[in-house]
Image (cartoon, rainbow, N blue to C red; front, side):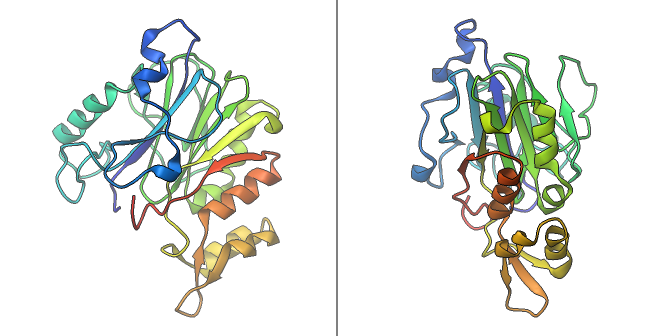
Length: 259
C-alpha cells in the first residue's frame, strides 16, 4: 500500500430533504463478503439507519501513476497534485458535500464538527458530526478505519486507528465525543493490514498489554525472536467491547495483501 491514501467517508443525511443524499447516489449497499479486487467503492455491510451513508474508496478508478496508482486522494503524499485533485473531483460525484479532510498524526485527538470552515486540514485522527449532510473523512493505508453511528442516525464518527492511535485511546475518545450510550452505537471496521502481514516489535505488544492483559490474544510470535504479528481487528474489537460497544461489523480484509 505504501503512502497511498484510501479514504473512508461517512455522512448523516436529512431524511427526504435532499435528493443528493438518496441511497441511489451512493450506489446499492453490497455485502463486504462479496467485494472483489477491481471494484471502485466498498459499501459497509452494517445495519445503519437509512439516513446514514458510508463508503470506502479503493485503489481503483483514478488517474494517479505508480506507486500511487490509481485513486490516491492524499495531497500530503508525493503524488502529482493535479492527479489527486482529479481523483477528488471524481469522488465528489458520490458525495453530497465536500468532506472535511484531516491532517492525521497517529494521535488519539478527536475533532467535533460544528459547521466551521477550515483554511487548512485540522489536526486530528477522528471526527464526530451531528450536522446533516456533512461528510466526515479519514485516510488509511494499512491502518484501520473505524466508522460509527448511533441507532437513531443522529451522530456519526470516523476514526483512523493505527496501532499508536489504538493504544492511545482514539476509539474510546471518539465514543466519548459522540456523547451517546455505547450500547446504542454501531461500529464498522474497514480494510486494514491483516495479522499475517503486520509484524511488530515487543514495544508494540507491551503498549497494549500495559492497558489490558487480554490483548495478548491479539499477538502471535513471528519468525524472528522478539517480533510478533498483531491483529488490529482483534485489538479494536477488544477495546470497543470494553467501552460498551457490542454491535461491531466488518473486519474481513487484509489491506496489505489484497485490497
